[in-house]
Image (cartoon, rainbow, N blue to C red):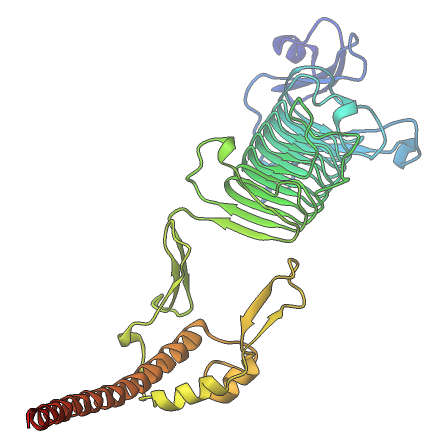
Length: 422
């Protein structure tokens, strides 16, 4: 390497020459000890094998703190000819690569953490969890293995994940995506907008750090303005809330327009659903068999279409009536019904034994019970008709006898009157 070549390539006046190949120059700047700088005079072309596995850049650094090859614990930065690159490091060695606000893409080998985008103080060392990832704008991943991506998200616990905008994942192994959601519990899920899993929520809209993970284990909130704040609760739809109860499921349709319309659970371990357009339950593939609860109604309408039925058999209404008369009907209470309310009716075993209807002898179909009642009413109506016919005949006979008696009485009176004149 000649001085002429160096001068022609624009070698800086000060600095230690590290290498020169006639086109590319590298030197060490004495003002920045240890910093290697490159000033290529033209595009640097590096051609290797068919897979481009040879490195174009191959830098090695280390720390004097620890033993290793050459007395260092090394880290590499390599850029390969196919465009791949790798940056290695050593956990627990070094400091955060950058503090404070700014735009950047950084790899923090000290914590095995990756950041890309913009941050104010969210990516300062105190806010970076080991093995965490954060990207976008002002998103924070404090927890171990945490992931936050988007805008102003916070993943604050071990394995917590937050995507979207303005979400907080406070609980361990929690997940949130959408906007303005809160997950304050372990294993919780909040998706949508203003969905809350666990609690309580402070006045500033954040999870209470002092009571974190006290309630809401495994709670799921999906939708808009939905709350599942207690253990093992699920809230779905729009304006739905578990209302402080545990083990519940609540679903609300899209009819509500304000928080005052929130549909709420009323007891622990309750299933509650609101569908102002009605409920439609189907039990066959074609969707033609099942029950409907129409909008605004309190009456189920179940399939009874003639075209949906087969194997018709006539019934003897007199026989049905006789069986109904013999059927034991009592009042009773369900063993597990919380209210202790009394009910009236036959047992499924007696009903099945008498009529042979239904899927088993442990339940009574509503249509079967209604059918038996209608048949019995028909039998009773025929019995009453027969009795009425006999009564009508007897009444006619009595009227005829009365008319005949009246005629005889008149004739007797006439005879008595005739004898009296003599």
